[in-house]
Length: 544
Image (cartoon, one colour):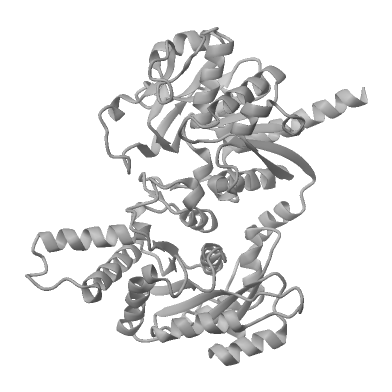
């Protein structure tokens, strides 16, 4: 395809309508027609990236191969499109303004007054086009974060409006607007006014949506579709109903069955009649119709917001589909575990995950959980901090190292079994300064990890400042905590496996970030498989 095609996805009324899933789903559908698709997420905040954000504020920080700390929607793009993206695919206000200010300081604007229009908007357009063209894709889907009407989003909306004009109005750019059609409980009628007002706001800045994706609790009634079509000046076939679904992986099928892909292709002048969604449908069937169920406890300090662990949740969906199992993820606040101990509810779970995190809050609850999993032979997966937690617990309770800890939380501990990475000493800036991105891991032949991965060299993504202290490795391994995965130079411990335990495995890296619908994270598959076996053992014991 000679000319890049752009699809801009905007949102109105309220946040959290699923723009990212809409964008990802459209990408999946276009890919099923044989097109190469890439994605860009625009975040209108002044942060350079998501790296320093609290998960309660922003949800999960997703890490890319190149070390970019980005919005969680890029994780959805990677999972739905089965591609790997770079940090340049996440454009923030902070990145844009920093670049413009640096150019002004360097004299690049030749003494002109630097303004939002044209300098900021030109920088935005330049970044979008540069990323899209460098990808070699046929179609670039650009999701604009926030909602129409937000002050923060205005420069980005103006920039994409200009792109539409510059590229031949309506020829190479298409606008998809996600909005809300609420149903009032007292009336039981779907209401179109929020959608009408949202589209009016969008049109006031010069953008006419080509497609409206209407979020609702139930499928849109035909009369409601007609009303939206008439009042918002959108073809009836381009008013798409996106009702609540059992799984986000249903959404591409829902959109396809309403003819959205055909409409987009016609509208952009693309001739790709053939489609192949068979693999996606098979995956979806395995998600929706599992043959068994297991409960996995997720013990962390951000459990009040599920989006804090979104990639883990999706990795469990992928693993469940692989094994024909439904995964019920049960969240446990590690601070409450500290206070209440190992509760009956936690004991009822078939496996345990301790995910990554930072800071001291709830740390003892995580150590208690790891001890319980080790002693009671409950399947355990530790990721990043969860790897370090397992190491601390074994040092304390198997090796008898009283007060063993990480120097992150106890700089004066007598047994610093987890310590700051050498290259992190002296680092003062918090943003983008950790050990980040894809790194090679050498896996010991014959180990559980090697069997799960099916190879002895893997590339996994990292996000950490601390590591297992090399001074303690010999003693830890003598206690049965074997380090079966190491960095390429052999210095950093990457995977731990406890001898004699059905499944007690942990990784310093984040396997959840590379999990895909039809290529699940091997470690999550391992945990789910072990959880199924654990559940069966308990059932057999009960029968006997």
